[in-house]
Amino acid sequence: MAKINWQAIADELKGINISTDISQLTKLSLDYYYFSPILQAQLQDKRGDLVVFPKNEAELLQVAQICVKHKIPLTVRGAGTGNYGQCIPLFGGIVLDTSKMNQIRWLKPGMACVEPGVKMAAFDKQARVIGWELRIAPSTYRTATIAGFVGGGSVGMGSLTYGQIKDRGNLSAVRLVTLEDNPQILELRGDEVQKVIHGYGTTGIITELEIPLAPAYPWMEIIVVFDEFMTAAKFGQALADSDGIIKKLVSIHAQPIPSYFPSLQNYLPQDKHCALLMVSEYSLEPLQDLVREYKGEITYLKTAQEATKGTSLLEYTWNHTTLHARNVDSSLTYLQTFYFTLAKVEQMYEHFGDEVAIHLEFLRAGGKAIPAGLQLVRYTTEERLREIISYHEDNGAFIANPHVYTIEDGGDGKIDMDKVKFKRKIDPYGLLNPGKMRGYEQLANKN
Image (cartoon, rainbow, N blue to C red; front, side, top):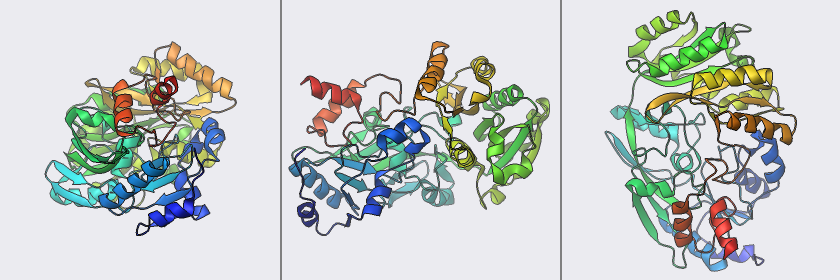
């Protein structure tokens, strides 16, 4: 890439909020990539050269035009709560921070239209006034943006009912800006939105989203403890399969994981395994029956009203579990696994022992509830981590590898030619988050 005169670029961006402050550039160029010791080595020195904070679509279009004119890489950022470098610029350039584009365009029963920088928790506060809420949200719910989750996330609380963000019907429409010679605004609807879901911002700059909503229930937060891990896991599956019990979160943790939650220790007896739950207040009685059936003990119970105060149990689940664990022991890293069956969970639990502490999150996939893992791995070497991954894959568990930064290799390993072709059309110079879509890079190298 030719040397860029950043002062000249700043002059062209006059009227748009920008920053070249080193500390701000560092902060806004990174995410939680350091959960992976492999990514930490690969990404720790990556930085953008300039950050822009557009307030509206017109300013964003101006930024796009300047990037195309000077062939400047452009990396879009939400709140930077990802874990595998989705928003880290590999080749410098401009970091586009969407935080100032944070308006709810409209909100009605069952549907909303929002700008990309709207934060999930802030949105839900408004939506619950009319009895609705987001369908799916990650453990970074308080700070994550809606477009950031669409572009870089996948699953979270609510996935037990609504599956993954990519499942048909979970995103209705997106409006985006292209990086063609003359950047334009496109609207994608229905199945076309797949071109931007989990695309790390490589296939357009989202400026607006239409999202379907879920009915808002009064969610209780509950901790149940068990003597045996597999009993806890079987309880989790039974609860996930109980269609008559309305639930939002079923999170199961093998020892020693509960010991990594210092603020919950009064509710987590030593050597017990635990379930962290979000269940509708209307479903408390059948839940209690299920707890008795599996010989569990409820040690923590907050009503929906009480759960709005203090730290939510959500913030100990999904990848916040990894965050809390690493605060205690920084040698820990993690994996993301689809086990599909409890038999596979038990096999891995017995095979790896303490080296891989199992953390399950139940989600809906293929029409049924399945156990997925965000296991904590005691990291020793990259070679050993690859052996652990291979053992899972050789034995029928699917790993979504969180130790790589390309879309394909962190997913199902396959190149999505629809995404590649779309990127070639709307980003012919490969300026949008370059290096993150392996299929595009391979195609470009062939040509």
